[in-house]
Length: 535
Image (tube, rainbow, N blue to C red; front, side):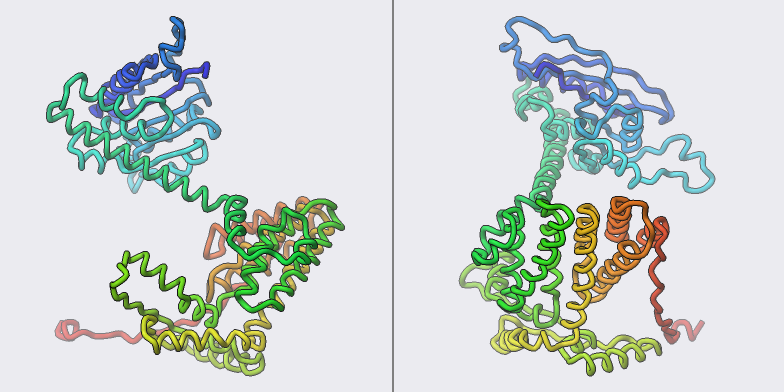
């Protein structure tokens, strides 16, 4: 690198900001890296903070051949590598000045607040919203770590500057090692006095806290990385039949392999063949609109498999009675081979779950009866069941229920889900023929289908409303504009469980909001306690 690493430290009065800057310079020089620090004093009464600007050249002095870098005296907008602050609003203030950038800056901030004079002057609650401040940091930083530095500082019995030093060391921005930072704190002493030992404790707590956040972030990134996860999972899935693989391009194969294996496990080979048939229709539609592209087909391969393998009582019983699940539970509780593990599962199936396995005419009458009961103010029926899965009787009951998957295709729930899937796929195919962006936007709407019970119903209703009123109803100038509206509606539905954001997005594009669902009002009898009667 030919550029110095730039760091801005922000600290309030009495928090040891100057000491922190000195520690960083000493740690850099201890490790053999050139460094320089400057400071800009703040003002009193919590209207500002003292900032310290440092630059560390990430090339060892021995490799410079006698040359020395020229350092800057102040940070440049958008060129900051690390921003560290002991107060959340101060972090947001520096971010608002344009010093951070989303493609470069790592932000480390305390979640703690010291109220400003303006906030204290308000008649009511004048405090700024912490969530909005954190969101601002996340928007304008490459990585961000927000943590309760005050609690860590109290735990260590030191000042916040020591905790901030640990956070800086764990951020990975600077080239120094842990020993270099600890040497700066000890300042040449072998063990250090009581104050230095407290600083070492605060340093260790800050370092561990940020390292834990980074580990969690790496895990989440790995989980959410679609290509890596699909490839890894597909490697464990059974191989695709050659005849099926030949029908689709290689880009679709990883997801197709997972979906095909899932549906064979769920319902059998015939059901998996229906999955392939549906996917072929989407692929053909996409090729007619954009030859050579397969993005919509890849998305449909994912969400169609998940929707077709909808959760019902048969599926739940199957998953809970598998040997792999029992072994996973033993691993989670760290049971030894000779330990006895008792496992109880609690179920509360209601009328919709039982009606799902009945033929449609009978199921519709049963569901209508339940709806009349609920409309009259009564609670929905549910059958609480406690099953000892570790017992022979409990396991046999679950296996018996899971063996009923052959009856699933005769049930009301199966017929209902297949009809709705057909509606969605028809919209995807029509969109793919019109424009690749439109087909892809509608394919991604399959993400709205998730969970079970009311969560599944709500996602399904949202998807169908988007399809019927944005894909087929509202007027747009171009297919790309329609695709953009569908994308916005989908993201709104995923952000807000209540659906208010979705209604706003629908109205913004000329589509009607979702219909309000009738909810019964239940009058609860007033319970008079003995104490109230005496009063």
